Image (cartoon, rainbow, N blue to C red; front, side, top):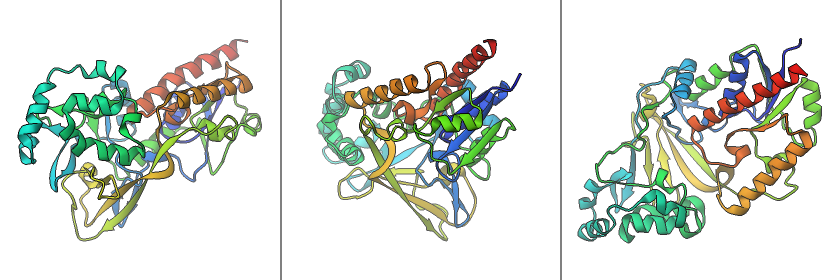
Length: 382
């Protein structure tokens, strides 16, 4: 009996994790990636001998022990914990907001009073009812909101904060009364300790004879059948943006993109005090500056700073509005009908139109892998 084969469209972290999972069960896969290298947004590179992230900072943090163990099988991780600085009234403070930072600001007594009025707010419950602006105002009051949140959010998203959903707010915005300075509470955290950063993770996932990678291949719904026939695929997993894949036949999905402009700074070990520094005020044209060396702990001369600008034509953050969610579902239903519901699968942030972290990408890949394996076994029994 021939080895089952799966076609995977897209070559990011989700696709590579999925291919690895299938290979462990003896199922071959062919990955078709539009770009010249796999890894997508998490791929690390070198500039002037300095390891850096060309697409902005990625911190591996998770509660999922299986995902953490898998990542560490591919490459060792250090014990980096992510702390973010933010520039408020010309001072370097902490993000998330710490109560201990309030006294360093003007009108601190008013801020303390506004927080006292709001102590005990059920943030998760409010997120179901409020828009993003209302949720933040009820959590922290107008002074902190106007300084930390509103200008940053509107630069980031290019629209008024009141037009954004509050459902993702509890994961991203908080006021820390315990003054814990670290961004993530997860028990497993770190950054790749190898010489090539996250590229080592990608290379490790792809290191199997049952995985075939082809780069520089742009697949569309129109030529998918030809690719499936050529590779002998029994099933297809799409990890790509579905509107682009379908030639936007039902319309375009909205994304908020960023562009990171990276600069090598010679003769300087570190140029800022944290891996990420946020610049919420509107006088700054960028939203934050990244410096990977804080996480990589590379010892070398020089550093690289990445200035992040918003509004670029790239697909970083889905615009979570009902009509966009409905449109992506329409594309998925259309593709299931066209390809066949028993052999069509979707995984990752692009195909599912969700903003998820790296561990969630890997978890989706592992779970989708189980679905694909079950489908391959069903085909083999026929």
